[in-house]
Length: 277
Image 1: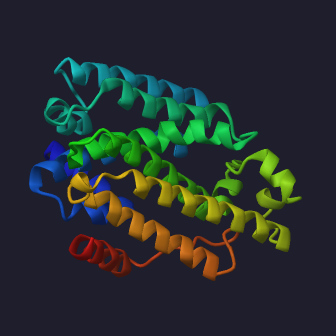
Image 2: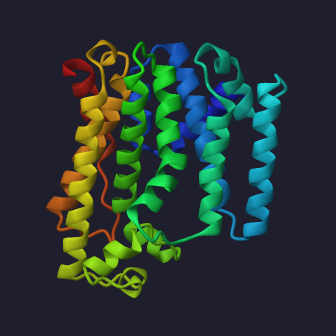
Image 3: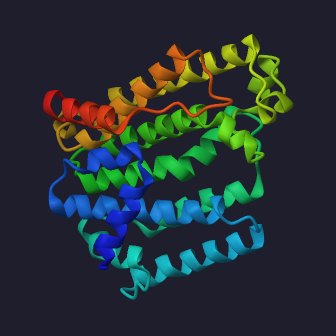
């Protein structure tokens, strides 16, 4: 299996909404974004699938060294071997790739966030930086496009947090800010034990409305000149915003089930955005 095939398999197996937007890219950019996505999956799986934090830290340290080796032209892993040819072409910065690893390491250090600014910092590492790197691969001519991509990454991560409240709770993690739980009189025990209530629904309504606002703020930053090149991000946004609609329509029942869109619906939303913008 070639490095590109390894990354393709990793991306396809994830079933992620991001995969559907990759399908519409020219081959070279598609290979680059698929390699970047595979890297994100590898380091994320290091934290999610390894129960021993010390082992997870050791593996993350290995990835830090592997990124440094890749930047020196000496990659050894299939993902870095696939990504390395695109580093110069798309101006992918090593500090951004290391920042993603920083974000994964944050999951080993804390499972609660006191307030929204603290959560934003985490989101920047695991999603905002990914947005910047992705926009660089998609192509841009205006500086504001990177600001758009960074904010769009935040919106994506907030959507993931909303969707995965119950799943994360079963792992002992609560990403919703503590002061916002207190504001809506929802306890950590309510989330960890999957206890739905009107208070919880009000909390989630607040989260969904904020995420929608972040999407709108991101779109406002996207320069007209780069809109065509940045269509993959807009495709992802169409899928994720529809997911928010489904969560709302289902009464915010995210504690004990995972609300998702079917693959055919994701593909339809991606295609529609590609054609009609």
